[in-house]
Length: 204
Image: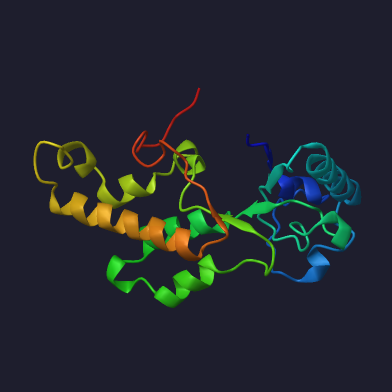
């Protein structure tokens, strides 16, 4: 049995400014100053204490926090907030930025490794290469960005894939492999995002 709890929008909850028009640089004053919503931090501490105390075998909690709040994923007994994992929310944005603006031949491995390893030591992170957000907000999934219209014409089980599809598939596999390998302590895959709806979704 899996008991998982996801705290969505933790960044907007933890701060009085709700993370609006705020760029977090990592300076501790950004996290432990007057802008921090202490009531929200205490609420999350209590919620995580309950999750881990009341569920047999322990539940798992995941925070959607882009600010990088220190101690978010440290135990309550250590003075932390007690969340088990945080989502590596900057990683999917980094991949889209690279794919959109940097030719494949100029991808910098040191830049990629730096982005994928940019997380707090001893706090567990869930890595992912893309999310449903990208196709919901008018962007494109990685597969569609790499292969474009060739997904409709050059990808078939009845014939050999086109060069564009072959290259796109290879890059897509490499992107997921390196993200899974060094992006965190766990991996998240949004099923259906890569090929289920390659184009963006327009909700009513």
